[in-house]
Image (cartoon, helix red, strand yellow):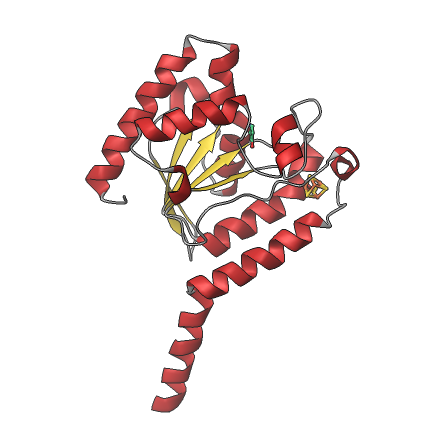
Length: 214
Ligand code: URA
Ligand code: SF4
């Protein structure tokens, strides 16, 4: 009996170990690379799966790839990405220490996705969250925020009300903090938001240091 318990423990350890996370994420990445489950596969050059440490404590979730991201196959490498890099710095974070992904994995020619496309593609985001098990999720913009609020049973709220605030989210096997933020691209379209974003990220950095997550 005792032996069996020990064996089981080792197996559990393997399940959550970094090696296992890398393997599961790579298998999922391959699936996304071949995915044709919604019409967006036709207009993509490269799916953008996401990047960062497989055991990252902080996960950022944007909307979906723009032109630059589609060309490079990496998230947030265009104009919005440059501003995101500044915001990470304001919070005292290095880009390499956070996991960055999107609700949608293929290029959005009109910068929006239909409800159907979101429903279809979020099976991948759900699995990324399950594998990485971040302690903190930062949603960038309305689409990611609404999706995560809905997934964890929170009442939908306007971004004006919730940006920069800390929410607790949990399921039976998962628990994390959620911080909704304005999308960095919204400050490029609407410059007055820039200051709000910088202040929200500065405050987020302070909170992280208090929490000793980083
Ligand atoms: N905007 C997003 O939402 N995601 C990206 O990866 C780039 C721009
Ligand atoms: Fe598949 Fe998502 Fe790309 Fe649609 S957007 S084809 S669901 S990976």
